[in-house]
Length: 282
Image 1 (cartoon, rainbow, N blue to C red):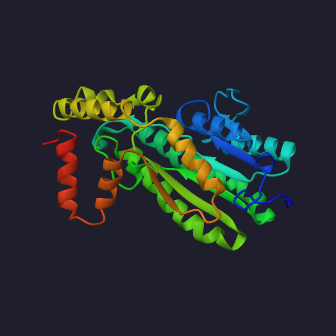
Image 2 (image 1 turned 45 degrees about the vertical axis):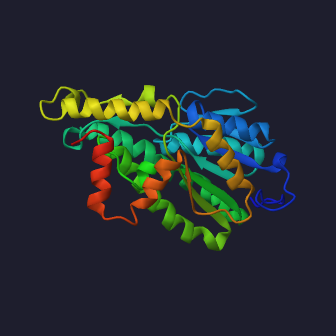
């Protein structure tokens, strides 16, 4: 169904005309973005497995790994509003552990949530955006989606997949005036740290165990001391309001962003050596 309202990135657009759907909205970055956008006057639907309606956000129950659940949530928004202007794919999870010891279930869980969840949401929303010939998709990736982190291998792999998918999607959707952006957060202080699952096989392994524990302590320390989610929420707001949003946005501590960009400049062996040093893997 085509919309007659002004596109959100056009000058003069009224926030109250803009319908935003965001996944993973019950906590952390997703919750911060949902509440911030709602406070700015947007119509915000926050989807999660256990929806929480706070800060003016309309709660939706959705499991992004299940296409049927996703379709039901999207249909509910369309039935209520007739359109979805902005889709923010934020739902994600992580499992720490050695790549070698990862179980098929652990691998599947990360890829299904972080990557396939994004794919499922886009598949459900895009027919409406394409019919309207406007829309905006913001996929929340990670700096770990362009710079792999040790003992977070499949989390990084899932975010690398989001990056590649988003690049291709951006080109395919350009003729329909649908904009695609990727946001790569660095370390943020959220509940993600406490909710990270940990591989027991890695913890108890004679070769990996101690190295993993040391690396995980550093990872968690950086996350606990990371940026506040409101900072990323402001970035997302700026992307929605931009007439010509960039494809990629990196948000976080300056040193992390600089080090991620350095990957394209310095030899790979140097970059990996510095990462090993930082995470105590020497």
